Length: 268
Length: 349
Image (cartoon, rainbow over all chains, first blue to last red; front, side, top):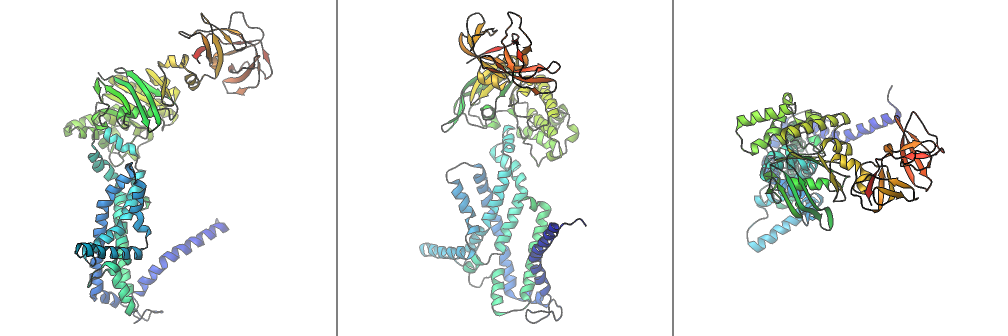
């Protein structure tokens, strides 16, 4: 009774957009339970076999483990490097500040495959000069993922710092607090929600990265995303859907947990 | 003793001079207001005293001690910010306790002093709330308690009332003045609001474009502006060119004689500052000896309890005259006299 034609159009459009986002995810989860031998419609029956198969295959187990390790490192590392950097970018006045900001955000803009190739070539050059192996090593992979994660931390933390009233720090100073005390007792606690959001986005950005890892994992090692792509090259069954479902569940759980400690919707 | 002395203090950002060389002495227990429009340098001067802005040249002394190069944390000054600047993640009690913790004071003393400080601003019942759960006026009182609990040598207030509504502003103004007097605390109050400045201060420092225009008591500033800027800023509606002679005699541009009470005014060309409410419209010829000129009422603006009349004098000068709404004049009406009483103040041109 109350809905005008424009209201109806609005509802339909919103519904369509949400459907477009959510339906593929639902389909993947649904397909992961099909008993069909190859990916196809309609389902012939339902089974949990694909999950068992995914977990019994070494490349998925090991890939998940390496991806989790890498993402944890990237997330932690991007906080250690990114928070002080953001502090300097948001509060400092120095020559080259804008250039530095752009450099720190650049990995977000450069296509992953280009960045991956560039890092690979760079690693080889370093190896030729120093005779220390870099490409194909874990530190090499971790460093590349730090690069994937860092722009997220810098972006989110800098935004939060810019929104932080400077006079709050000044008030602390006038009450006798040193710069170090102000950082740990005033700035960090206020930034907590933004830091949790940064850590999460950094983790996810690293976890879902395929392109950089493709160039940089060593022989005999694989990340989850690489394992998925290689598997798809030779097989077309619901194992992939099962792996994807596990991954969706993992990231959804992370988002939910994070949202309890920090209102993510307020980080943007 | 904690008088504040500014000795040739100035601030420049590159080629831009924010505050020109300024010298000032603020006595123990005095409340001095820096008054002026935005960008006049009043906040920059206050922030230099607080230590948040580096001094380009000159010295700042508090109680005889040179604090010019000390960081804010070593100055022991109470600073209250326009935005209150409460720590959002700490309770009211924790906010007030922060400065005492920084001074390594014993736990039980902190609890006692925080309690006293909150009682002083009547907020002891909100000690465990977070700042965002308090109203603007309450937040400002917390900021005041937090600044005072450290027993600062001086209190610096940066537009502390500008985020409050009119009624709260009046209450807070009274409260700040009472606290300041009872603690005998040397205080600087920054505002752009002349009413606020007049009613709260012992002395005013009127600033414009980085320069001190006039220093004086509220009465002196309000009644005897020393410059065209101060006269205009303090609400003198009429600034009329006048030639001053000896013994309080002067002449308007038309040659009409006027008597002026202005101590120390030098003979020569000057501006006569006249408040609209100190001028009077009279019908017919004015009494001899009174400051009176004739003119024509051009139009009027009804303002409720009074009426504003733009009046054109015979020599073309326009004046704004405030009249009684019970006894209205009509546009076009020619008036024999325009009495100026004896309150017109000469302003040096």
